[in-house]
Length: 157
Image (cartoon, rainbow, N blue to C red; front, side, top):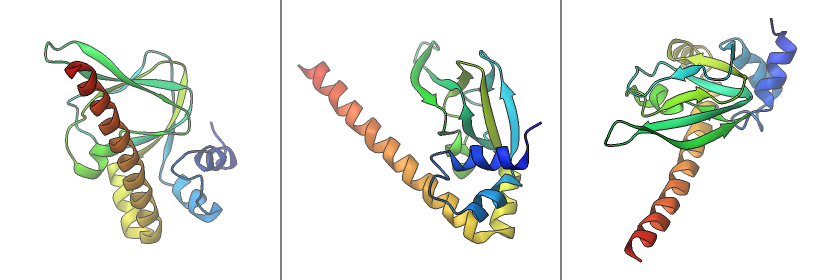
């Protein structure tokens, strides 16, 4: 069992909450659950309903996407401190990829229902979270756009 102090310190060490106030960290801690995920655990599967996001507070996970032949291709490795599964909690679409724990990991899970509670009960915290998620997704999209241009350039050359 994780103490409230430990939980708050894990939250504060994430990319999402690195510049948050301690009050926001403590408030957020009341809405998340902590899970230990042994290496090899499927955290979510491509196509599943997306009803939670995770803060990866320990370990490493791999993200896989099925190619046109249905074969899983690793598209990313995510290390501690990062957020995973945030797209579907925002857009309610099915999971776009599969996430599997590469090492023994610890995740803090925020369900869609608890996120709705934050919106209702702590609107300032909700705006903070949405703003940070938008920035993180924008950074990822810019990075992927750059990789796509490099890939297309190699294919053309």
